[in-house]
Image 1 (cartoon, rainbow, N blue to C red):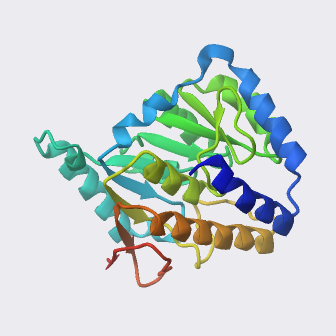
Image 2: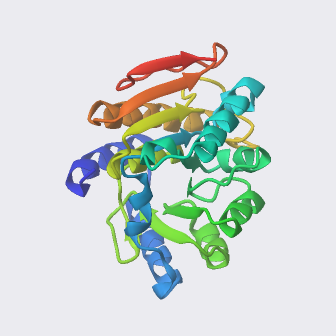
Length: 259
């Protein structure tokens, strides 16, 4: 998404949620200067192009064994299949807290989209395993950016504010819709959505303790809207994998698979 297209949405979100735009910008500056030449280049996203992207959110459905077995099977089939087709090898994009679940299943995500709200030890394990950490700066995670980013090796910075040196804006607000935005921005051929339970309860892997449930629900609804908008404007084949317990529909999905 071009910045000029994203910025009006950002201003509306900031007004709705009383987000301090100046604090967002200051933390983007903070992130930009932390590692100097140690940040990754957007070329690291090249492997998404023409791929089958498995985008895993931290919704409650990923706690179910049927969903976890499906994830393992998808990743296993890709690794076992001998093929030169990029789409045969799924690229795993995990939204923050979903990283912990992936690691529990023995899966190291290719990309972790995080504002450092998830389990920090899991984020470090993913980083040490080779995951590319797409770290997002906003006004409320200044301390985590400052203290945790220097310990992470494979970092590419993002912001919801103005892009800066080493800090990019690919669109998106929540970890989930930012993950979808990456898959679309870098031209995934097929997108499988799992754990995108925007209308359900807050999952275990999303946040251990929710201090402001109303605010969290508002963010999820914004994430749902942005996900639908992104998918509607994408040429990728999109399948939403969910369960009957946590169904959450949105625009832009070609197929729904209930497991």
